[in-house]
Amino acid sequence: MFIKSNLQNEDVEMEMNTSRPLKTQVMAVDRENPDLNKIRIAARVIREGGLVAFPTETVYGLGANTFDVEAVLRIFRAKNRPYDNPLIVHVSEKDAVYDLAREIPDTVEVLTRRFWPGPLTLLLKRAPHVPRPENIDEITVRMPDHKVALALIAESEVPISAPSANISGGVSPTTAQHVYQDLAGKIEVILDGGRCDVGVESTVLDLTGEVPTILRPGGITLEDLKAVLGNVEVHPVAAAEGKTEAEARAPGMKYKHYSPHADVIVVEGEVQRMVNKINQLVDQNIRQGLKVGVMATGETVQSYSHGLIKVVGSRQNLETVARNLFDVLRAFDEQGVDVVIAEGVVTTEIGLAIMNRLRKSAGFNIIRV
Ligand code: TXA
Ligand code: MG
Image (cartoon, helix red, strand yellow):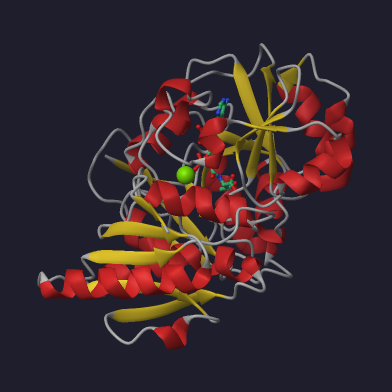
């Protein structure tokens, strides 16, 4: 059964215990100056228990009212996400973290002053009044640096729980088109605010232990955090150097991630040796009758001549690689590539987040030269 939500002028169909496809409404919004009328329509959907995909500075999120457990559970169904993989709670004001968590360490004040709004997610102990649909005692909170996201949260007047707006296990979305491809018919609204700037997800920092620990590297780097906190650890799973699933600290760390349909092979090492190895692999795979994609960088693209070659960004400016990474992985899939062979980059600064995503997308199929 469908109910029409009683929005002025707008027809947004809401799901009521049905698996029949919804009509997903896409609304273009100006990222610098979001139209408040459109934001209010989306906020109303959130308040009525619906799902809204929205842009953030990292990737698109799929949001529901944190205090509406039924709505939050719908996110898991829409994405086909395992129920024990918890969601990040998005807020539009720094102080909101104090309402959502308990036993908050002093570092939170320092970190939110320096990095919020921005791509840093803080893992804390959950306040007792906050629902726990994922059945865990911790909570993750972040304030995104995006006017559309902030306006949506503020107008909804509730915190918004949101994972990345893709089918679970797949590649995160950095455009509204990516979201539409994955979730059309399953969610009420997509706010289209254009392409995301950072391109990889937020850094997840665990503040519940002795030493702040990065569980997932992201937009705020280890170096950024060390400059403010001094001592910061990187969980072995966050480096993603190989399979260490038994040690996984965050429930989500154990699941398959960022996987396009194509197989991915990552080649890492000194640039010239890497290029030589990739050329050899391309020829081998083409001889086997496979359609091969090469994920190259601006500095190396001239060294390849076979296969479908795409430039992901520049080694001199790894922010460009982060920004384009997921889009390029999706583009290879759209062009029916069987195998993507990708160049590795250094694991300093944003490179750590890039290599975490690439190594996981490759299922740790890493060749070191
Ligand atoms: O940039 C981002 O963080 C994006 C945008 C939409 O904000 N969100 C995002 O959410 O990437 P998601 O669900 O795709 O990834 C969140 C990660 C998962 O690995 C999850 O397991 C972990 O953070 N996480 C979330 N809440 C947690 C909790 N309470 N305890 C442990 N890990 C948690
Ligand atoms: Mg995700």
